[in-house]
Length: 199
Image (cartoon, rainbow, N blue to C red; front, side):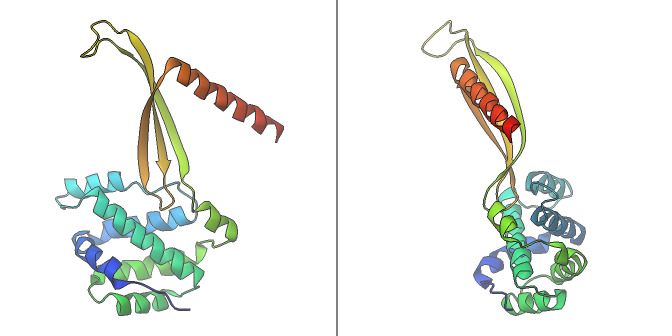
């Protein structure tokens, strides 16, 4: 029941973890647990990062996403190895001596309170390798002109998908389609809906 942690992955993150106040770090850990339990579709590191920056902490969303990935790896590996909170903290302390005390306390507390709830079934492990759809939005636009054509009046549809990747990071993916492409896109969705009706 050993938890194999490579300190090189954590050492770079410890300086950033040190910047994060205990309450924000606890919120991040709890969101990771909720994501691993499939209670939320993703961890909104962008929103958390904005709140941290507003409170005067200099951290970027990439660093926060890296920390969320580390916590997710830590908790999911601890669940697979059925570690107690004490075993998790002992293993973590042996692997990374520079981890801030407040972070170790939060990890211990969150794992002790909520760690046993993480499901590690085969289905859950397989599902974790695929991203999850959260929301879709669209808008219709008209290109009026370009540098090569003065009068385009060319309609297009912009679609934005909000997705959570397997680690829980929420991202927006936007793309534009011509009207014929959008009609094909819509037709495929109608086909999927028709198939789902037969299930």
